[in-house]
Length: 150
Length: 161
Image (tube, rainbow over all chains, first blue to last red; front, side, top):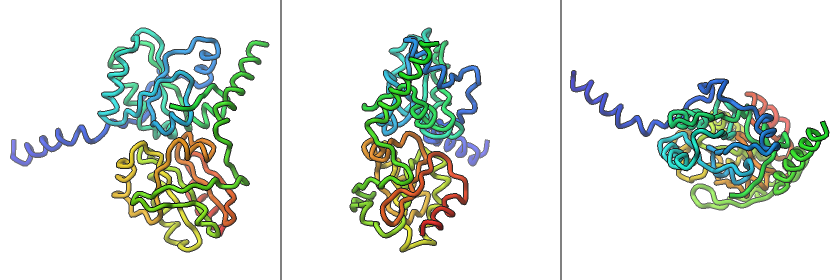
C-alpha cells in the first residue's frame, strides 16, 4: 500500500463520525410505517403504543403527541447515543412508534437513522409515523391529539 | 358509528386545544412584533422595518429545503435592497448549529434565534420551511408552509413591492 493510500484510509476513518448519520426516510420499508389516522385511532381507543419523538426540541416544545417521550434528533452520533440510552428502559417486545415531522418526509434527517438503530437493537414492533409534509400539517391540523410544553 | 363520531369530535377538540396556546397567523393577520438579538448580539425588531416589505424566514440548519432556498433569498435581498428586508429566524436548538450555516452561505440579512415562544407567536411553527410575507403596513400578505415552488417567492415579493 502506498503512503497516500494509507493517509486516505486514516483520514476516512477520522472523518467518518463527523459525517453524521442522516439517511433518507425513503430507506424505511413501507411495512414499518404507520399512518397518522391509524395511530390516532389507537390513541383514541386507549391502545397507545410507547411513542418517541426523535426530532428537535423547539418543535417538541411547541406541540407533540400526548405522552410522547422526547428522544431528540438522531442525525448524528451524539443523538444516536442518546437514543440508545433511552431505549434501554423500553420493552423490546411491545409496540413502539417513533416520529419526527420536522420537514417533508423525503428530507427528514432523523427518522431513518433512528429506525435503523432501534431495529438493530431488536425492537420487534417498531413503527415509524409517516408524516408526508410535517407534524403541523399531517397531525395537528388534522385534529389529532397534541399537547405542548416540555 | 356514534363512537366513531364522538372520537372524531374529540380529536378536533384536542387539536384545537393544542393550537389554543398559539393563535393562527395567516394572510390578513397583523404580524406579531418581536425583538431578538442577531447572531452578533445586536437587537433586531420586526416593527423597525415598518414601511418595507418583510420576508420572515423560519429555517434551521437541519432543514435541507430551507438551505436549498437560501441562495434565492440572498439574491432577493440583494436585488431589492431598501425595499425588502428578509429576517431569518433559526429554529435550531443550538446557536452553534445555526451559525455553522453562515460559513456556507454569504447571508446578507439579519439572522436571529427562534424558539418555542416565537414559534407560538406565529401560530406554531410545526415544521419547516415556513415563510411569512409581510406588507409595508405590518399585515401578513402570504404564508408558505412547506417547500416553496421556485419562482413563487420572487413573484409574490414583486407584487408586494
